[in-house]
Image (cartoon, rainbow, N blue to C red; front, top):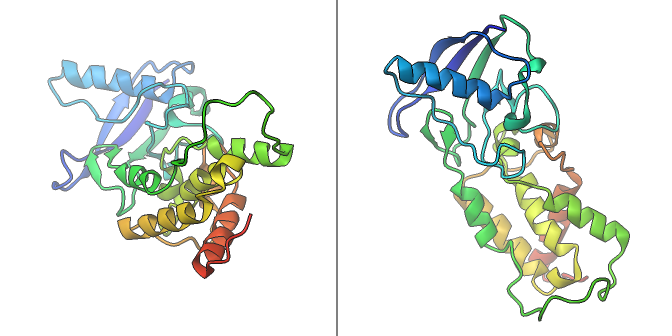
Length: 250
C-alpha cells in the first residue's frame, strides 16, 4: 500500500508547529501503525532529516506510552485499541491520514506527537495509592470481596493512563482517568480507610492542573482503548459529594 501522511511537526513546546506531508510506499497490511512510522523515520534519516518524534514503549497495548490522533480520532479508527496495536489493514491503498498530538492545555506539546502527561502523575500522587499499613500479603480469599466489587475494581484498574480520554473530551477533562484510578482502590476493602481523602485530593489536583470539567459527552468512553465505562465518573461524583459534606460512609 501507499499511505499519504500529514504529520504534525513541532520542534519544541515554545515553537510553532505545522503539518508536514510525507508518503510511505510499500506498506504491508500486517504492519502496526508505529511500525509504519518506523519506516517513515528510516526514510527521513536517510534523507538527512529529523525523524518524527512519538512516544512508545511496550508496543503491546499495555504501558499507555503511545498515543496521538489519526484523522481526529484518538488512537485511530478501531475501537478498544491503542495506536501501537492498530494495524495497517484498517486502511486502504492511497489513504491520506492526518496525525496530531493530544490537544489539551494540561498536555503541552513537547515535540511533534509527544505531549507532557505528567499531570496524570500528579493526580496519582495526590491519592492513587494505599498508604495505611495493610500487613504482609494475605492468603488468597482471606478477605471476602464480592464478585461484583472485584470485577468492577479490575475493570477500573485496566486504565493505562494513555490520555486519549482527555484528548477526545471537548472540555479536555481527566475525569475518566481520575475516576478509574480512585475507583479501583475505593471498591476494595484495603482502600476504604483513605477513600474520602483520596477522592477529594485527586479531584482537587486534577482541577488545579487545568483539566476541564466533565459534561457527559462520553467521548472519553468511546476512545478509551480499555473501554472503561463512564459509570466510574458517576461513582467518583457521588464519592466527592459525600466527602465534601463530611458524611462519607462505606
